[in-house]
Length: 380
Image (cartoon, rainbow, N blue to C red; front, side, top):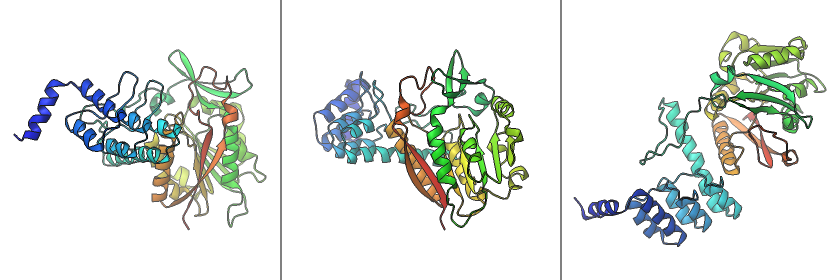
């Protein structure tokens, strides 16, 4: 046994995980050198450890704005998306200090982590992404919020709140949460404008595909175009949404075709291929995660009728935290670029809709000032 190994075992026998974790945080806050911090890590200090306030060593490094320590901790397995008791990640701290370098290091670490998980998933590895200290970073949500099957068997209710806002609510346990809400109108209106206006080399009525009806906001804007779509296909699986569509006359609208089921039920089938492709495609599903969205991305090139056609999606993953939102936005751009798309981003200011009472008693799913609207077309 080497003397170095003996030293590590000796330290671990004296100090527990908590003491080692606290010593690592204290070393960072006292601005010790990378070499000194590395020694503490080598002695067994867990980079994932969080103190009673929820701070990790990565939080501490972002706080003192030491990019070398931030980089070292990330390389040693620090959890990029761990939040403290106030809900702030290390990236949030860097962002609040306007430290672009530290923020970018943390954001990019998040993107790399998600790409690795994506690669593992593609190879059938259902690992839960645990580090050597068995800290679970990702878990499977079996509720209606994270399970398509549970969502499709749930009860939805359409109503108008006290502010006159249209809302679609999901009953989960003893509470109701928002599936789609009227404040999204500005986002949907801008999306339709960007998807359908001045498509290069095409001045006829467009063929449109929308996946997920919700309140029908974006579908209504499609129908209100100066030249309504020649074909407007809507894919929707939830029985309560389909009943809402029947009650509001969508089954009888000219040019509208409704496919009852999940988008996965129709990809590669005659029911969808009979339409010979679309000029504008949009997707906004509930309870699906990024992995599901990425799978849809892969099908879009074959669903577009021509390279000039456009594609967009509701870019809302991680949208209660600026850092997480940025990570998923970057991840989507990387994946879409790899699939042959050019992606442009358009900021929609939704701060005005962040007023008190907007959410009522429902779960917030977008709490940021800016919505980043993606518009994608195949590279020519």
